[in-house]
Length: 458
Image 1: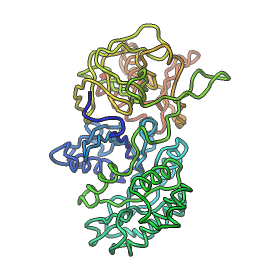
Image 2 (image 1 turned 180 degrees about the vertical axis):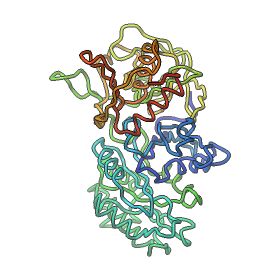
Image 3 (image 1 turned 135 degrees about the vertical axis):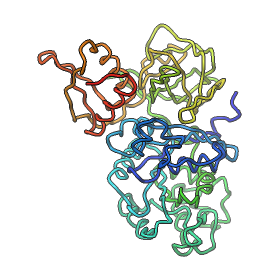
């Protein structure tokens, strides 16, 4: 068994507008948590997250990347997601398997288009939301105005849980601390605002608070009320960091540990049994002793290990040598090797408990959004569909060299497996193949990848 349980797991996706500093923050968190010896830099092309040659050349994320951090007795599955709208598909797929959407905002640029779209999507999926204001050490960043902008845009439930201090060289916790001065004013005032917001979600806690004050509440009561606020969208904490300088990074890890929900504490996943008029809600339970239920949210056609299927376990314990079914399939496959991901590296493990993220390799029948399970009792179930943007940008293509039609078809199929917003259409009347994506950049990257990985030019 792993050295951690479901209650010790935190699944967190870093999402936000392009250039908000998600990958740099991802590196800083891995370094602060001891996963890597030194944080890589996007400019140098040596990050754990952006390991693909095209990502290194372009200086931005194209895929999601996953790595784990063991910190303070908890196991954090951290996902770095692309910021460009052209690569929104992998981002939304990642948000479907986490409990917490950590929306990263550039301190100087403030709320941008992707910030709004991703916050709305996370709210619709009933995720706990956290706003991380990054790059607080920028001289042109008006942090006080940014807090007001966040509250105006997303509601008064957005409240700072820590505040920049010491000339933005550090941060002060204003949830546990009720005294001190920060760069944005009184810690006591910020503490009072967030405690007032937290206690009003629960009548029992509110009653005791009104009678005895904060000292009448136990740590467990306050913690449980805080998590209830996150689940119900009654609180969206704002925290401050500088991934470059390290200000607030370790405090962010501590916040993940103490206050972000485990898979057993967040809103239950949205599963549906059957489809159409006969569809009904289906509940999984994060119990390691029950039947296995897992959902595939990422496919990677790796040139070295073959097809890699990355999944989130929702129920049961998935072990090596387990026999698993795919969707409603009758023929099971055997899990020969089970992996945890650390960027491009695959670390072999023995088992994965409910809430964990793992991968299997070389199972060609697995596809994106496949449900893996070990009993026919779980046939005909699937996660609630993700509201992906429609790929409207189209391009008609044909092989640049005759005789490569089959090679082109294979390459397109593998690319479509990896990206839920990349589509292939065949027009029989015009006898042409049309690829569709979310924009010109999306399709350009796909054509470059086809040439680089599969040696097919069109």
